[in-house]
Image (cartoon, helix red, strand yellow):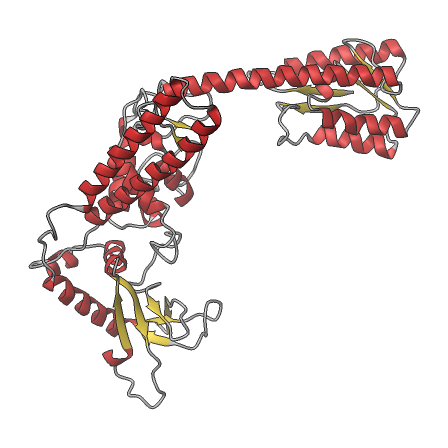
Length: 459
């Protein structure tokens, strides 16, 4: 017997049990012995991406001759995609003694008429599923366009189970994490400080980098409505505002998105809580990045064999002090006066407003029926991509302002009050690398700045 139900909302198993009862009664009436029961619960037969383990096992047993037929409630329990039915029909055509029966009606897959009827019923079921999927998708899009909650799923961190009401304690955690990330602290470091201090998301026992990153990248915390994984753009060309209250501002979320999706921001991508100031910044003569470690209790930087030559080593203390001095001397010489009359951010704001107006005009033209669907959707994709690129640039500019290294008088006092992750963030903002030059074996062992070159960023 094969049993399947697409969705058992209450997880009671009653749908499967009804199929089991009726199919067993069918087998008894036909005088068949039930050799095995194959059940796929909460699995769709319409979605091509869904694997049905019991279905695959049934086909394998039919092929191997372990069973001599199939009984089920209806043919649409077996398949809602014609290709799935054809796999079963192929077996019935190659093995003439197989039997088939359904509670809903007589279908004999061993005959041409039975196969024709089965194919017809599966095609009808397929169209019914496609119509339902289309109606559901349209309803979901409409709810998204109205800024309403999607319904279902797990409770989002920061909100009650209604997906609308903010949980103040959890919102404070998100705001704290956002602030610390923008100040240059790593996700791992933040998670370690959160463990045992703040409530964890869902059933998690500890905070993890992956979970925290997903929370901070979720548009919902900025009060924006997403659809199919992207921020939904309304008819006016602007992001759709959700009905729930935001936890952080849109500007803050854009900065977080720019920072957390920037693969070049750090060599380790924030996956390791760095303990050494220059890890990932030092460039070995072989071009590999050097990392921090200890040798006999003394901190040092080394080129590891798995990444580079494995031969270069430098003592950390003197090198850290030298790079810090050079960096602070450079920052003290910098002026805080803006260059030019127009800031990059204001130019980007203007370009974004123009792009939103252009997208809105395109939507108006399509709504009025003056352009075809094909032209509209192609142009919409291009305009939305350009708009998202501009917003990414603006977020990067705001991040640069938020994380801007201290300059001018008092820079040393500010530096002394920073955490290691914050210091590293400033180093990576100002420097592209610290190039380590080869040092002859005959050179004195004392530290010599001649063998190091600070490469400043030009972007």
